[in-house]
Length: 456
Ligand SMILES: Cc1ncc(COP(=O)(O)O)c(C=O)c1O
Image 1 (cartoon, protein in one colour):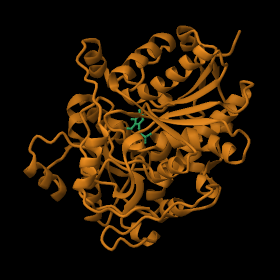
Image 2 (image 1 turned 60 degrees about the vertical axis):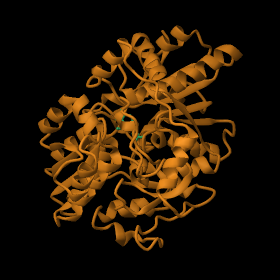
Image 3 (image 1 turned 180 degrees about the vertical axis):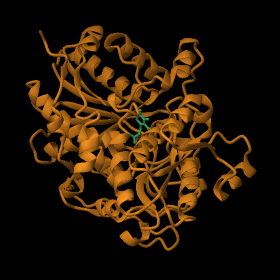
Image 4 (image 1 turned 120 degrees about the vertical axis):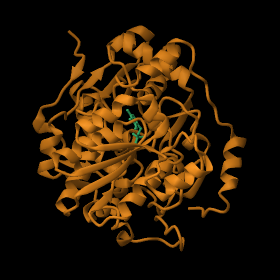
């Protein structure tokens, strides 16, 4: 019998996270102060994050030890299984061998607890009592609620209004884990009130929700802010995914994969699967390995956004980060993949794209749901709308192999289940999903509205 899932023992949960900053051929440009536009040091981030995370943000150490308490909690769902997608291979009639890492086995149902748990842990040991955050589709808010509960911390979640209305049960899930969840923009913050005054029907965006959560955190001594993607330390925590996948592929008798893919919102799951493999490419062990970020055509940050310094939030409170961006003022179309509706891209992912080490592809939501339904029927798992983007990317790669007859090894990160997203599947089946695209002209028009932004 051909193995279908490749599993590791609890004791094989990684002991270290992999920090790609140690191996980059060109170092990253520094973040800038939002006012002075001068490089900032670790102290500037101290009102928002615990020092341990700030040190991880700037570290050049290759391997960073995972604390025992965090590893112990990780074993609630880690190591996650790697599946050989035999059903999908058959449905596509492809000679490619397709593998996917299944992160939907976490209690929250996605990859997000891989960073929520260490973030809650480091805040707890620094004496913080309360954490604020934003959430798009609700996966990140759920993960942080779960993690805060484990460490006895209060959790306040600002959820993008369009997703809050599309997914009513997410709030109940977060409340079950003891958190408070409200729709953003809200009237609780100055940022929210300002946006509502200008547009009372604003559907919200991740950038707006970040502004609210940051404002809430800086106002209280006992409170910190936590971000579910984009920042270096978040990407670092997600590398447990790729490190496990590397071992599991070896166990399956495979060499390094030919193509590695992740869907792309802020960049954390993509980096999580990609960076440990990229390390081997940087070491010259497999020069022709392709690493592909799969993003929505309606929010094409990597494929169409210029590489600039921009704010992480909509109002302009965060440091300026070097990244591919559609402009912090950009409010993405109301696609169902709420977790991919972000104007920017992780600086580390943007930097590796700039260096030509990775590539990016954009897909519209109709073709993504088509691939997601095919995956559900072949593999049994109903993927989150975000996850359907990487499935589309992987299916296209496998179909190319069918044409060329190549037996490539394709490995992707299946980030979460779509059990709270069935309204979006309903919309797909009843033909109500729109194919949203953003053109280069639309992107440029929005970038011009921001005025002069520094170039990295
Ligand atoms: C299931 C799922 N996949 C992917 C993402 C995208 O986030 P990131 O790019 O940080 O991995 C999200 C974000 O909410 C998500 O919920």
